[in-house]
Amino acid sequence: MLVEKLEPRVLDHLAPKVLERFAEKPWTKSLFVPSVDVYRVGEREPFMAYSTCSSRDFFHPEFKRIFDSFHFSPFFFHRKYWEWVFILHHISKLPLEGKRGLGFGVGATEPLSAAFARSDARIVATDAPADIGVGSGWASGGEFVRDVAGLRNEGIVDPAMLGERVTFRECDMNVIPTDLTDFDFCWSSCCLEHLGTLQKGIDFIINSVEKTLKVGGVACHTTELNLSSNDATVEEGATVLYRRRDLDELLHQLKARGHFVDDLRIAPDSLAIDGYVDTPPFGPPVHLKLDLYNYTCTSVGLVIRRGR
Image (cartoon, rainbow, N blue to C red):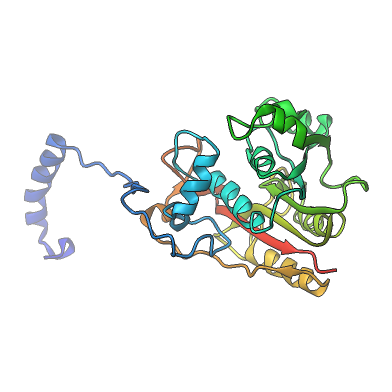
C-alpha cells in the first residue's frame, strides 16, 4: 500500500514505531566498491575502447599489468591512474625503442617519463617556468618539478638509466620553444585546462601536433570533460572545462588540417561507481567523476597522429 493512501490516523500510529526502529538500528548508506580481482574480465575483452574514464578499463588484465609496472600503492579507482594508463597504452602502440618523446607539464607525481625511459625511449620532460609554477601554487602543492631528479620513478627504471634517457626543460605550453621539434610522440596529463581559456588549450593541442611532432608522430593528451552540459561551462580561469562540442570541433579542425584522430567516444556507465561524483576533499575509494564548479566532470583522452 502506498504511504500517501494511508489515512492520517494510521500514519499517526505508525510514525512513532518507525522512528523507534531507526533509533534502535540507524539506517546507513554505503558505496559498494567492486574487487578488480573478482570482476576481472578476459584478455580478449576490449581495452581503452572509449575516450573517457570508465570503471570497465580497471577490470582488464592490461590495466593491472601497466598499473603494477608503475609500482604504485595502494590501488583504487582514480581517474589520474586511468589517464596515465591511457597515455602509456596508446603511445606504446609505437615501437618505442630509440624513439624521441616530449612530455608537457609532467609535474612531480606523474610516472610517464620513467615508464617511457624503461622502454628505451629518449624523453624531454618539461614543466612550466618557475614563475608560473610558483604563481599558480603548483610548487607549494608538491606538483611542480624542476629537474630529472624530481621526476616520479619509485623503481620504474634504474635512476642512472633515467638520467641517461631523460632530460628536463622548462616550457610554457602557451609558447612552445621552437627548438622542441621532430619528436615521435608527445603527451600531457590534465594540464591544458590550466592554460587560461578554452581556446588556449585548443591552440596548445594543435601546436603540439604541428610544431613538435614529425609526420606520423602521435600526440596523446588528457583533459577535463564537462559531463553536465554541452552548453554552460567554465570558459576561462585557473581551470576550464571542455564540453563535448568543443572537442568535436577540435577533432573536425584537426582532420581538416590533414591529421588523423581517434573518434571521441563517451563511455557508457558500467557500474554504480561510474555514477559516483566525488566532492572535496577528493580521494579514495572512488574518484572517477568529480564536482568542479558545480559541473560533473571526468577525464577524457585524445589521440592524434600528425598527417602532414
